[in-house]
Length: 130
Image (cartoon, rainbow, N blue to C red; front, side, top):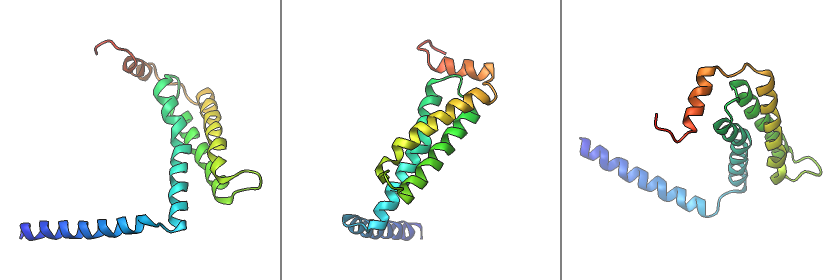
């Protein structure tokens, strides 16, 4: 019945939630490292394209994609391989400027933003009612 199924869902979610909470109290080092790497990769690949893309009307798709991949492909090798002289936690300090430079190059050499899209973005940045 629907009621029994609903009750079973509640029990299973509660049990899995309790197991997850117990494991989270003392996570394995690999899991902590993997989580840190994933969060860093997301930040390195998305921070610059999202922030610049929100505020700059000239940024095009080429720039966004270039910034994404430059940040990601710079961050991951440094964070994973930990080359001599660069601590793993400093990988983001290399990846963010790489992402910004790639966005500048993408904006410069990629196709320009269509006037209709530029007007739409500019309208989003005004206080005037639409």
